[in-house]
Length: 466
Image (cartoon, rainbow, N blue to C red):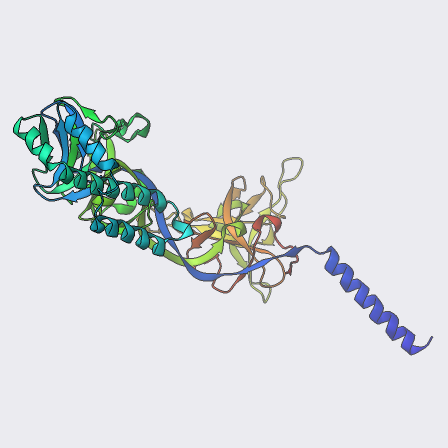
């Protein structure tokens, strides 16, 4: 046979073999382990506590407002009026319908608000459109009603002299809110789980009726910029915050952040986190409940995808039974095993090399290891050792029956082209990634390559990465 034909057939066979191998092997996507950070944040719904006072009507009649909702009012600012016989209220409405009510200054302010909103608009913050609509409606109402009141000043002066038209001014500086919910006198001492049930929250608008009876609420005045948010606290978050004084929070509505002083209070058998803030209250003057994230310190370590994490079952043996076979140059770690026979007897002890995947050193809650090494437990995985077998301590009559198993969380290291399970110690997780401890004895290190899909890999599997 021609030597060229032989070479050609050899090359062809080699190529076909490699193509076949490539097509039939399982291709595993890999991930390179890197150091990373995950911001620890936890979602809660908080209950707002403020210094609030309700002002009630001294007369009955038609009700009109002159300052938009959730606006700062200085002492003496005109807020609303009560018209006992309704005549002034009718003239006020007629003046509002007149096209000459708005001044150039009013129109300029409204145009400026629209222009500023249009310049800052982003699709990602479309929710702010509803806030803008509410603010613009309030601004228009304030401008129109105040202008109309000036137009009919001659009638209002006469009605005031006859004590049928009554103007209400702010008695002290504060933020005006036109609603009540029965929680205006809420205090920290009165906290209970029932208060956090939003389904039972009864919020009543004061601007829908157009009329008021004597003794009914006219408006609410929030008189202090300092405010508090109370949060029902679970044990895990209590442990995280214990001993601290300040934390950062994020308001979900507008994604703004703030630093808050905090204390942990126990009321009625329940724990509450009390967040104290010194500004920003006016943005949430219309709310009693608010969704927040508590932002804790960032957690840093080895960052791995959650999809890489798998579990594996191991046999548990006393760590003190592990020994080294010095009869070979490799000095392998293993156990002297007496295999259980079908008749219940045990075979003669033979040395079986094992791989230790983790050693539980009985670390207490303070991080202190048990000094008695006899209490340490080793996690091993070896097909030649089964439950029911016995292991023998070297140079001793002590025996231990292999009967207990446990699972570990870990990833499959594929640095050498085959899968090797490596135990991990998670610090923190979110929906996509987990931060694990660095420099663990039986774990992974930075720049290791691991299987991206941990559940698709088994111990010792030959890996072709893609």
